[in-house]
Image 1: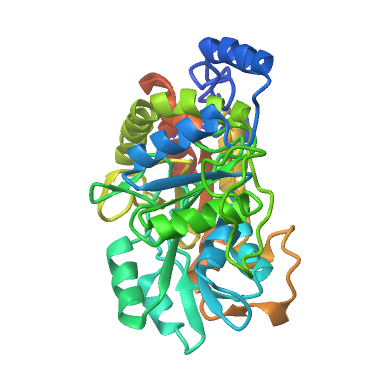
Image 2: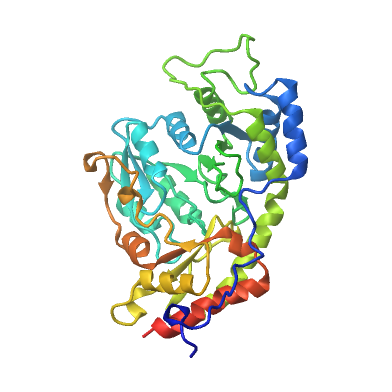
Length: 406
């Protein structure tokens, strides 16, 4: 066994990997010229032509009847709940492992997030934990298609239908993901997407809701456009919203829509490349004792990858060693763009400021173990790297785990 680099041995990566994408999000030269033309035409917002075109194309891409662009992927969740009339007194079930916006959006609507555990393989909401947490106050569930997997929409939707609950899919990580042939977000009542700079479709900031219910689509459009109906023209009288529908200004600009249109044209091919890269890595990593990769969605016909998650079984490490030691040794081998992600479940993240009296935890054992002791989160760029550098990536894991495994 060769000595670990952390102990003075030779590094696996003597120089940084060269085939990783230099920057994210991707930028295309032709889009830069189009943005310049848009700047000069003085039509930048309020259902501009690029926004309307993106809504049309994104709805077609996801196989839904309506897409509504909004300012970000948090207000999309808020508007989804408001469109479904979820507010004070209601409970909404959310997974323990997700970005904090999933839960904070529930609180912003006056409802109570109820936290439930995740599956140990997909790291997505556990359907059994979901059903066990349902009370007479439960009105909805927000399954999150997390990192490199998809929530079990067959089981979740069946449970929701059984109990008369609404389903809001949080698809912030899952652009291009398909469950049994259907694009995520199209399966529940409303799908919520983020286009923040790190996402698979990214325009700096932005989001969208998709739905197959045109009435909900109209409500979503009004909620995010100060009450104006979808496709309205500024200064032209239009039907007002119904009384009591409190609408906001969550509009986007045509600059954002234009950037997204250029990326949407590449998304299917990029999703395929990342998925093939993930499977190439998975085959090697799953053969290493003490290592396993987050499972793709059980019925994923196209698995999206916001990140690639590798789980270290801390119980199989030598006495006194932890995930932190594994990461330190991997870094010493020259491996970059690997970390612990958020490092905590939703309700313990540093920016989570919601008092314990405003949410309830029903189950969280798996999520806490994954977040604090198991997960290593790998940048999606590694899924698009060359096969030779992916081989070296796996060799670094094999080398470290050979030394640290019991």
